[in-house]
Length: 189
Image (cartoon, rainbow, N blue to C red; front, side, top):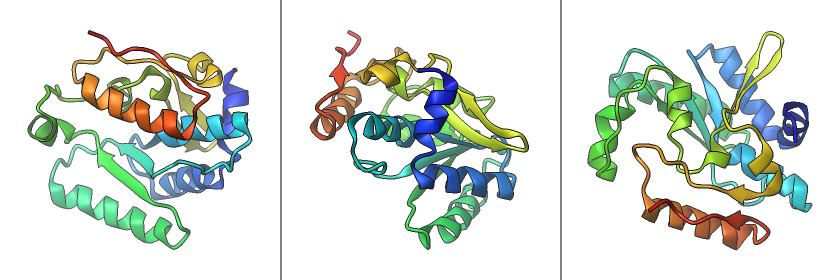
């Protein structure tokens, strides 16, 4: 699967196009639609399921140097107001402030990020290390590992500093129950 094939599959889910357009219109700094909603849309296309099957929510990353909770909450509420009426649940997180709460919530280190793609790089699975955004000229895709695992429906652990074998196992088990066709590789010891 190449980038054009990936985009064609991902955009079959109207929510992905709607969200990326909203982010573009809002002008959120360094904003991306990321992770599971993209990969799961491709899995659904590959397996002939409804394009939104199994997608719990749509994750948005952006990077704003204002690390106050109030600023992030404003963005969360704005996106909810714009997208909930369209039946789309979004979880937005300012990647500039993740290091402020991640360690306490998850008990794992989380060094400060410098851009949204740094957050994408730390996902539990390599296959979900993908971001999509709308630009003036179309779409930009961030996919440091390419699309081979997505197309082959392989879930592979990502040895990031914040990796949790327990979280990986839980995520993989949920996905396997929804998409029995996937291959889950063992967690890193």
